Picture 1 (cartoon, rainbow over the protein chains, first blue to last red):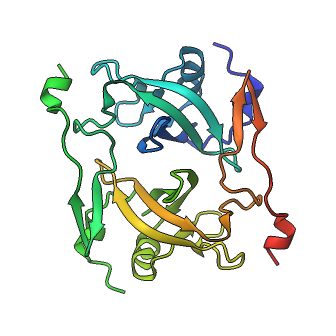
Picture 2 (picture 1 turned 90 degrees about the vertical axis):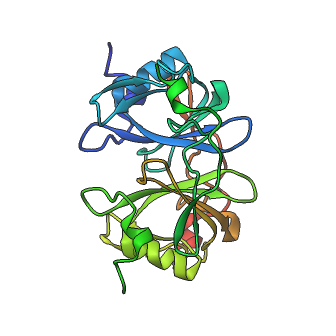
Length: 130
Length: 130
């Protein structure tokens, strides 16, 4: 795979060769999740038009939705002013971005010095991951 | 400052004692910027109801808008499923979040293997920072 593409070179990869990525739902504007990409993940995201992340815990490419079917179709890719953060606009297949079975990952709200879960589980995670 | 508050302890701070933070405009849903907070920054954000980040380049607290007046009033604070990413809902005073004088930081769009600037400068940065 050609890793000398200039648009990839313009990115300010961090010391681990990664860039933080925000996935936003194109249709609702909701911020679904946050993850990381390396060069290969970003290149695959572009060519396959679906989100491919780098799993730091598993140290491998993470084809989002691979197991669950909850693929993120990529509609737009933005880079920030410092060239070190990516913002994706996606359509979230299945309506579930979070491994907890919720629509998105940001379901804990700070209320009076407590993190309160304010959004429902849409699907039991045990039935999502086989 | 009391740093043993349990809601702060529940956060999975990274090895530098930081957490990534996404700032989203409450009124439009637009993702404005991405930055980092340490414990003190997050605690100040909560008590002052305005975004206070940790500047990694300057290694000090960054009271967003301190110089420019472009303060971010905080409406909602969310934590993700892994307790390691914060999502803020803010109102962006002055309508400019980016140091380039643009509404938000994600103004470079990937088009045919090129990053293209697709959003205008609303105010000359030289007039923002004195």
